[in-house]
Length: 172
View 1 (cartoon, helix red, strand yellow):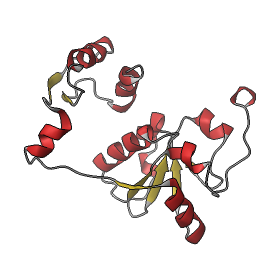
View 2 (cartoon, rainbow, N blue to C red):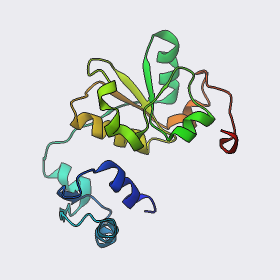
View 3 (spheres, rainbow, N blue to C red):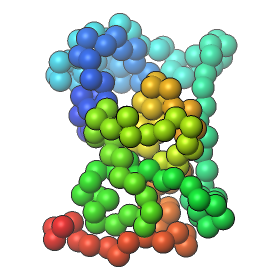
């Protein structure tokens, strides 16, 4: 929808990258149009029937580890873990988990060398979309120890995980 083209431009660096769309049925042309408007004209097709068709055909799939905000709070309390906040810097500056590292998905390609492939990282954004995008990118670069926090910061703030005091973004 509204941010689709912007995220493609952010996350797919090579404008000549071949793209296969997985789009809701009936929205394939709209997705192609949005891609073309930002210069991505190398779409080679779309997956008719979406992910369900892929799965039913027996094609390989990968899944990502996800935990609830409540389970994250339990782990956070019981052991030392590394949390990556993949939101925008302004969101992080306004409020974040006290020991989380800012690793904005907007600049992910600039900071890949700052991560250790042997460490398990717990990733979150505001609600879960951007953190799954970050995990997808990191997996392409060989990172496998990744856990998505379902519901993101919006869910974490209702747990007992310590967060910084909220600062209005207009004053940051």
